Length: 91
Image 1 (cartoon, rainbow, N blue to C red):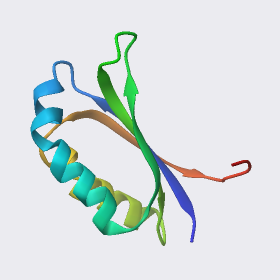
Image 2 (image 1 turned 90 degrees about the vertical axis):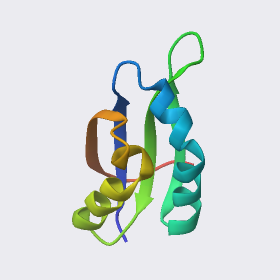
Image 3 (image 1 turned 180 degrees about the vertical axis):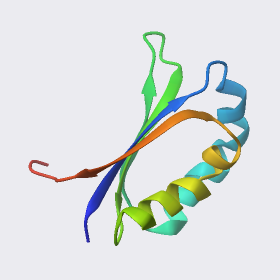
Image 4 (image 1 turned 135 degrees about the vertical axis):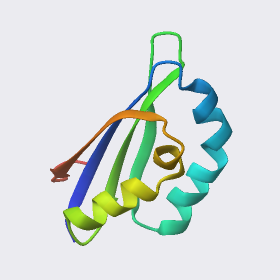
């Protein structure tokens, strides 16, 4: 199955949305079984400002559906979400 990178940028002031939905988001990552790696982008002070996720799914449509169902996305956290095919070379 192909890999897809999701590059998500939080809306300005999204820290409260992120905090309120973090547990559900982490459960979703674990329970769906398609996340290869995931973690937040941070600002210089260590605050979370977005997310990078790599999914192992059947196709782009599956990546889009997964992204739309993410509790962070459903709560309106993201200003933008880019979905790009990604090829693992090292690691």
